[in-house]
Length: 168
Image (tube, rainbow, N blue to C red):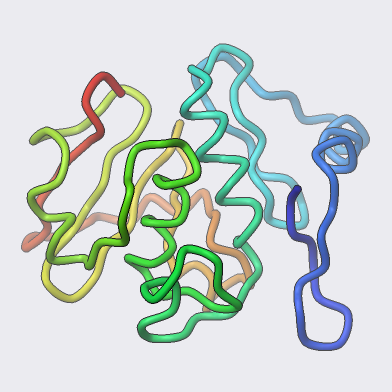
């Protein structure tokens, strides 16, 4: 289940079929190795993405339009708003990569060092975000565009640990 634009404050669920229909109507396609961003800010996994990457993207779509709240997603994976690390914890748990929520500081040492083929996490004590199959998943994008997904690839600057899930 994905989440679409809000109608009166809260995001409304949309089906994966609706996302694919929108993708088809837009003339875009999910290229090999590169996720696509639909006009309403949802991500489409590349056709050749491993199942875990597809699960991460699907989970990201579920919360893509939900609001930001400091501490959101930390008491429980299921929440009505998420902060940066709560967002990443939610998608990693949905894909079976985490069993408990993590803070951005925890994510500084999570997984393996360096960039991954499919997923790269940037984390420091105050913020975390990631790239999944070429798309950025970040609460900063939520403030700018209304969705956590973006094509934004600004220079990351220093101060972030660069990590990835093993094998990804």
